[in-house]
Each structure stands twice: as C-alpha cells, then as structure tokens.
Image 1 (cartoon, one colour):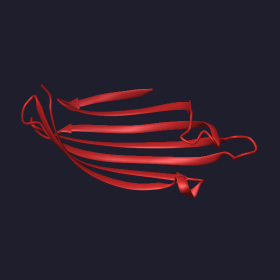
Image 2 (cartoon, one colour; image 1 turned 135 degrees about the vertical axis):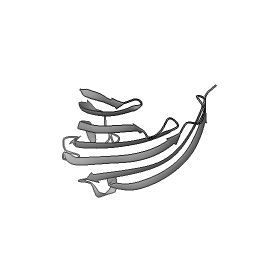
Image 3 (spheres, helix red, strand yellow; image 1 turned 45 degrees about the vertical axis):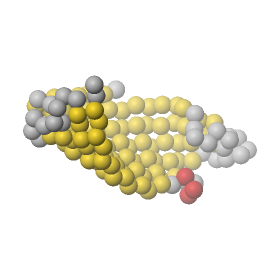
Image 4 (cartoon, helix red, strand yellow; image 1 turned 90 degrees about the vertical axis):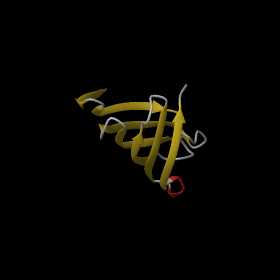
Length: 125
C-alpha cells in the first residue's frame, strides 16, 4: 500500500509499505526471504528549473535457512538518497546525487556500508 500527497506544483511526499516472500540472493543456504519494506520519498520544486528530491527505505527481513544447512538469519537494510536536478529544457536534465546503503546481517560477510556520489546528464529526443 502507498499514498502520495501533492503539496505544491511539482512537489510531493509519498509513503508506502510492502511485504514480500521472495527468493534470496543465496539460494544454497536460504530457501526464501520474508521482507517488510517501508519508504518515504519527497520531491520539491525549488524553482521552475531545479528540483530537489530525497528518499529513505527501511527493509527488515528474515532469511529462511535451509533445514540442516543454515538457521534463519535477521537482516535489515537501510537506504537513503538525495538529488538535485537542473532541468534547462524539456529534453535535458542534469543531476547530482548522493546515496547511502547499509545492510546489517546476522552473517558478517553479508553486511554492507556504502556511499555513492553521482553526476549525470540525460537527453531525451
């Protein structure tokens, strides 16, 4: 389920939640993964040509271990990001972004901390 609130032209807040049972990234040790996903997204039109956006996701999950091979493991993922986008024409966008990912896992080798910075230009014709 999700919801969106438009609070100004080109500006909104959206929130949502999903639950899924899916195949894991390690099917040798785990049969499935139960995941709760919660998110918040914000987009704000700073001006007619500049848009700021941000997102936050939190995903607590349980990796279901294969009997006799692996016990169940709790794993939480957190993702956050922000971007500033310049839209000089209807065909061009230029964006600068920052993303942070963190995975906390009951298995140390699956843990992750990562920061990424990006700069992109896109043309659509």
